[in-house]
Length: 102
Image (cartoon, rainbow, N blue to C red; front, side):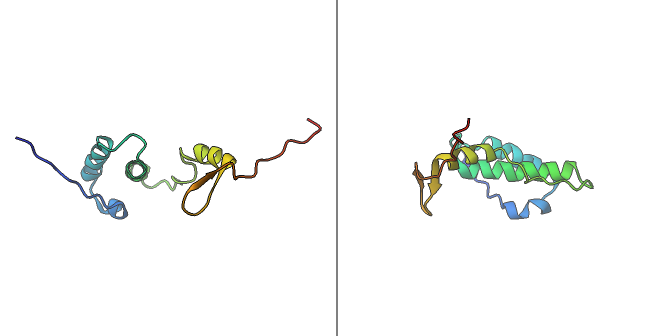
């Protein structure tokens, strides 16, 4: 027998879910069959993980979105390309110049 199960996860409602349900969502998001670099799957896991962190640190006001894992890659990308509004254009970014005195 084969059964397909679909989960609809509303990240805007994560705060309203029980701890048990959030833990289950974490596991579901981790076993998601999406490709490894899938954007939406990564964003989902990030939102659930940050909700778990916020609950763990409940009562301790801590910023959880200031520094993100993707920041480094984004900085590297914008060194060599720019966003045109619909796609990344390679070689279009202005690279910083090195002073001649170095």
